Length: 185
Length: 260
Image (cartoon, rainbow over all chains, first blue to last red; front, side):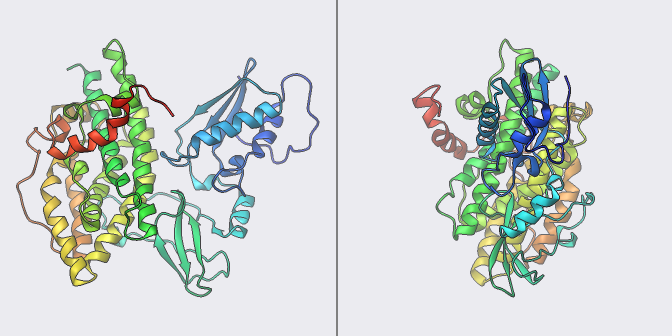
């Protein structure tokens, strides 16, 4: 069983081979699957596809959930099957992999740019996790979020939860527009 | 009890608390004071439901090791009687007003975060990975409920009064979170579970600081519900759980095996 942990940089447009598609073609097919909630980002760019491997005639796709209760999980599994059937792979096992837990640090750099132009402030990169046990929550640092429209840092948190669990709602104090912030996770 | 039976019991405690609190939060759908909070309450509920499913799925697998057959997450959630539920009493408390919901959430979130962070070091890799996943989500729950305690406490006279009343009324349900019984001690000894007694001091540091910032008074009552080994974790519940389960389980009871 051969496992590839990361997607090749750009494998789109290659010739379809005879016989079972190569893993490069599998990754290219998966790169065409948009996230159902944030369609400007593919599931590969989102970092939730953790590996693909052939096991005989069966293709195993390892997927990690963004959030435990994410209602898009089952839809994503269906979209993965459809995208792979479209390139001739019928026997697909979508395996749920929990560990390591998904992190927004896995979102591809080009996807962060696209998030911003879509009006969603991209997540900060999590440098390290500090054990704050026993420290008052009031003394824990909070990030400053830049407005994706006007670049202002004069922004205000409205709610920790937006239209999906992965986003918070903010308001810009300068351009006065509300916007979503993809929470670091 | 065999060790697997104890682990099964422990996993139900973790899962049932999540599922019951998720159901409570779900009752807010369409009733939130403003749309942002309606959405936030149900997002928190959704996270808890997702975590509860993972705990109960694992519980069912562990059950299969010492019984002929293990139950699925759905069978556990929808077909057990109240006396078989192992959730914390705090989780089954009625929603009350928005202050009561947020006070309940605040007490629980601060505990939940400490518990999950401790469980990320579990010797059972499955426990550790579910906890690691959950801890990330709960850090946002904790930030939000803390903000609301401060906002309502340090808000108007009316919001201050209501938040103080909620914190005081729910206080006696917090002791159970930190009381250890034989099951929890066995799991902690094995390095799989967390000793809840060790979580009380850091919890109190956080809770007291937030309540102080909110210009509220830390409740002082020492008598606690269910911390004597006869509480929710042992299957002894308030009358509220039965009503909650009647609504939650109704469909599966009326139409056994129904699926989407």
